[in-house]
Amino acid sequence: MNDGNSSEKHPDLVGGFYDAGNNIKFSFTTAYTVTLLSWTVIEYHEKYEDIGELDHVKDIIKWGSLYLLKLFVPPDNSSSIPARIYSQVGGNNSNAENDLTCWQRPEDMNYPRLVAVCDISTASDLAGEMVAAMSAASLVLKEDKDISEILVKAAEELFILANGTEKQGTYTTNDDCGGQARQFYNSTSYKDELVWGGVWLFFSTGNKTYLKYATENIASAVKEQVASDEGVFDWNNKITAVLILLTRIRYFRDLGYPYESSFISSTNKIDLLMCSYTSDPKYSKTEGGLILLKPSTDAGLLQYAVIASFLSKLYGDYLQLLRTTRRSCPNSVFSLESLHEFSQSQVNYILGDNPLKMSYVVGYGGTYPVQVHHRAASIPWDGERHTCSEGDQWLNSRGKNPNTILGAMVAGPNKDDVFSDERSQPWFTEPSITSNAGLVAALIALHDPPTGSSDSIGVNLGIDKNGMFENVKEVS
Image 1 (cartoon, rainbow, N blue to C red):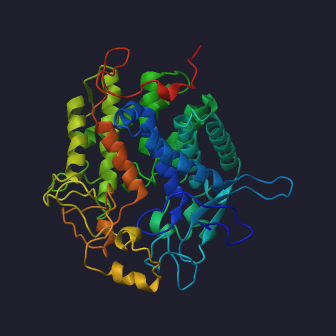
Image 2: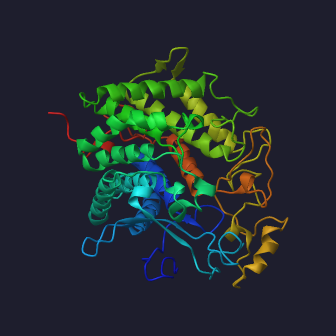
Image 3: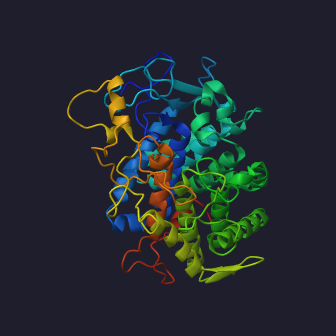
C-alpha cells in the first residue's frame, strides 16, 4: 500500500495487478490485460450480462485503468520536466529482501519496492499498449463519462508524445526503464504497439487520423515482426489482433479509400491464419491436440492456445454476421464449423480433454493443479505475519496449497503433453494475468448467446456488431 511513496520523486503507485505468482507489477502486461478484457466486453457484453458478470468485469477493467492513469505523468512545461511512464513496481532492488528473493504474501511484505521509470522516447511499445488499453477501456466505461473522457484524453496525449519524438524504441532495451522486465517480458518491437494504439484510438474517438496512422504503418510493423511470432497474438506481438480489427472495419464499416488496400491485405492474412488453425499443417499440435503456435517454446503453451481459440471463434462470429459459411486460402478452405471446432477443442484440452485428463484451470473438474506457483495461494491465512525467511517452507513444501486460487489457469504442459504439478516448477504451475485474460476471452466467445438475442438480420450470436463503431461516423 506504499508503492511509489518510498521517494519524493515518485507519485502514488498503489493499485493495479500483481503479474503472476510473485508480487511484481509490470505496466506492459497490465495494459495488455486491460486492452484484451475490454475488447471482449465491447464484443460480447450481452453474454457477460446474461451470466451476471458484466459489472464484475467492468470493475476489473476500471481498477486496471485507474492504475494506468497513475503510470503516465504528462510533461510539466512550467518546470521543463519531460513526460514519463512508470514501467514496473517491485523486483530486485539490491536489498537482501525483495520481490524475487522472498516467498511472502503481498499482505506481509514490508521491504522497499523498486520503481522503474521511462522517458517516452525509450518506451514506445509501452506507450502504445497503454494508449490501446485506455482507449478500449474508455468504450467499456462510457457510462462513467468523467472517467471515460479522462482515459481518452490521456491516451491521445500519450500517443502524440510517443510519435512526436525522433528517437523511438522498446522499453526493455533501456536498463533503467525495463532492464528487470527484460528477463520476464522482453519486448521485441514497438511499431506493432503504436499501430495497435492507433486502431483503438480510432474506435474511441472516431478520428480517422488514427486509422490513417494504423493503415499506413501496419506494413512496416509486419516487417519488424520476429519470425517466430508470426500469427501469434500475445503481450509482445499485436500484429494479428490489428489485422483482425482492420478486417472487422472492412466487413462492418467499410470506409473505402484510402484504407481499402490495407483492409484487403489484412483480411487475406487473417484468412491464411484461420486456414493454418483448422487444416493447413503450418502449426503442429501435441499428440493430445494442443496447438503449438511457438514450437520452439516448451513452456506457457496454454496462453497461445486460448488466444487462438478466442480469435477463431470471434472471426467465425464476424463471418456468420456476414452470412458467410466458408472462406478459402490458396491451398485450403475453412468453414464456420471448423473454426468453432478448433476453438472448442483448445478450451476442451485446457479443461481436461487431454492425455493426463487434467484440468489446467484451478477448481474446475475432478483433477487440477494443487501446487500452483503463487505466493498468496501457498501460504496459509492464519492471521499471522510471516517473514521473508519463513516463506521458503511453503515454497519448498510438497503439500497442496492451503488456499485455492479458484479459476486460475496455470502455464500448462509442455509440447509432449507432460505436466508436473510442482510449485518449484513455475514453467508448469504459474498463472499470469495475461494468460488468464486470454482464457476469459476464449470462454466468453464460446459461451452460448443469451436466449432470444439476435441482431437486425435475426442472427443470434450474443455479439455487438456496431458497438465498436459508436464513435465512428459513416462516410458521407
